[in-house]
Amino acid sequence: MAFTLGPRALSAGYRLAALERTGSTNTDAIEAARAGERGPIWFVTSEQTAGRGRRQRPWIAPRGNLAASVLEVMDVAPAVAATIGFAAGLAEEAALEKVSLEAALRLGPDRPRYALKWPNDVLAGGKKLVGIGLEAEAVDDGLAVVVGIGTNVVAAPEGTPTPAVSLAALGVQISADELFSALSDAWVEFRGIWDNGNGFAEIRKLWLARAAGLGERVAIHTGTTTLEGIFDTIDDTGCLIVRTAEGRRVPVAAGEVFFGPVRSVGAA
Ligand SMILES: O=C(O)CCCC[C@@H]1SC[C@@H]2NC(=O)N[C@@H]21
Image 1 (cartoon, rainbow, N blue to C red):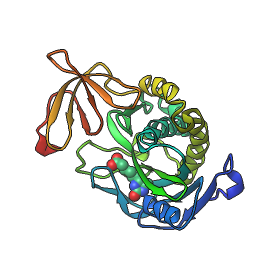
Image 2 (image 1 turned 120 degrees about the horizontal axis):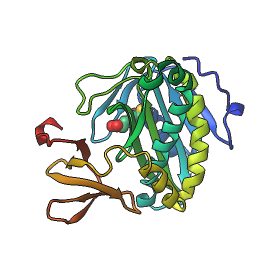
Image 3 (image 1 turned 120 degrees about the vertical axis):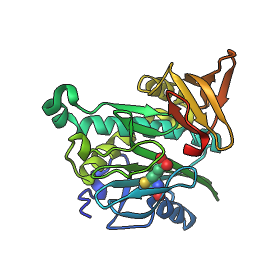
């Protein structure tokens, strides 16, 4: 894969490991951390053969899609590290807006519109365009945090719980390389605002302004139960707050969100 960016093209001391093909960039990043790598460093490929999604699902990404994982060893608690995913969603959305400018002018009212779905997806027209998977592991001198971002650049998988879409299908004809260039710049900005969790209040505000389904009906499948209600907000730890029919405000730390009419748990 021709990732043309060299280390000098990345901002703020970030390095780049550009891989022709790999199993999982998240695995590459975690293994590097175990071997002493401290980051910040990107592991990037446009052909990932054993990608890992959330909830033990595979992440299917044919050649041409972007798989990018950024590793950094930090001095933060795991619960704080978990909120970095919101900064990642914002960075990806900003990168998508940048690379979609030409298509937006060409397509006018039919241009792609992006939104952030709790906890870490980016949607286009209600369909999943980007998945973000966080991993963390304690190392000698801190917590190795890996933010893995998968974008459907040329193709989207079929038969997923949330229907998926690709940039190509939306009329945005760009390469994984071009998207990574925009993403790595935007990451520096939003990672900076997040500031090891100190800036999560600002990230939360920015995220809520772009959130899909805010104030609307949601069903959240947690694996064993389904919680229904109105998507009220996210709290200062990143939990989704659901307002139930009885007026309770229930914080949800993990689960899969479905908008609109309730679906059966089996369909998740
Ligand atoms: O929505 C999800 O389930 C999260 C998907 C995360 C996929 C990305 S692609 C880059 C990185 N490498 C992986 O193996 N997973 C993440």
